Image: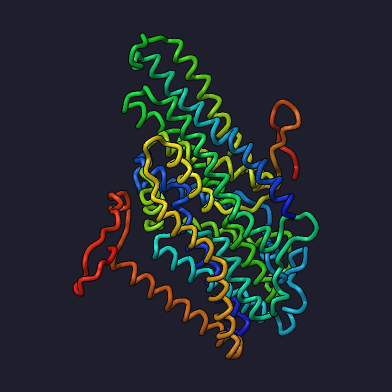
Length: 93
Length: 407
């Protein structure tokens, strides 16, 4: 049991670092890109490319949150989200 | 009304009361950071959190009927009550549930009064363990899981309590320090407004997930009581009224807010800036969902506290009040034994008198304790108006005898 718990713990840590630290970083980069697009970064001229980059980054974050909601709702109905292939899909638990 | 029905009614009402305390105790987990950073006003935060809890509770159709099986031996694997607690028409089982719930509520109210976030599931498990030991002896408790399954008191309570705050803390620490590196050159406007949406999104995820998980526990306990008294006979479904009642009760509790706890988490541990609040909430949401995927039973409270602490460690220049964190940690350690002690005492008191009278006495004692703690809380009320006030550092002054005291 101890080993299983430790095994769970490091899996949660890895998933937590990927999503729980990764998404805030993407989000922060998105905010920074907007500032770049608006010319609000000191010493850097405004560049519309910032908007495009921000769009991509924010889309990634929103997609992750949407996946989270799908996951919670699916669990409530006795399903879970599987990641066997490239795209996530809903499977019976 | 027959004595059995009175007993059942008392169990149902007490279970809903627990559900209510579960709601206001845990508003802080999802919303403390958003309230502290002013991403949401206090009122907006509780409305959003309560609505999502309601939706979450109604969405979960999977039956959590075997909730007590994690730590005690009252039910068979399929959720039906074991014959030894059903001997006298189920009254013993009902009294065990009532006393256990009473222990959990008393501890939830006490920690709320002290402004300490503590796990409602650990309080519920603690109360039930106490009343079960009082009724059946130590053999009624499941200490460890069989084989490699992470189960029993050790697997479902102690290990998660040791592991989850640390994991959440590391995740939030890494996230926060990276986010502040990225945001270093941003002006104040981007820092405060830009990060709001990310934070509200993560807080919403946590609220929804709380509704699906926590309301189910009370649904399971009520349904078990109904089965024990012969009012319900399937273990594949929860009665619709039970589901509606639990969902509404947890949402009302959440709406009430538990401001004392929100204040400790949002202002007491560390001053929270918007980028940091977002990192803390996203760390909590990810850790909670990842462990739910693995079936690892951690407590939202421990995760949320660990994340806020970690975000304080990760933000350059932030001052973490480790004294407050230490007080919380001692609260976590006491939750299970304290709720168990009250649960056991309640069972012994309730057992002195014939079934409905003993149960009524337990119920009256619980109500008395609740009223007492509520009145005590009014001496220094905390609500949406003062939840975000500056956190006063303890001051050393001299009392009237000239001794140094900390105020």
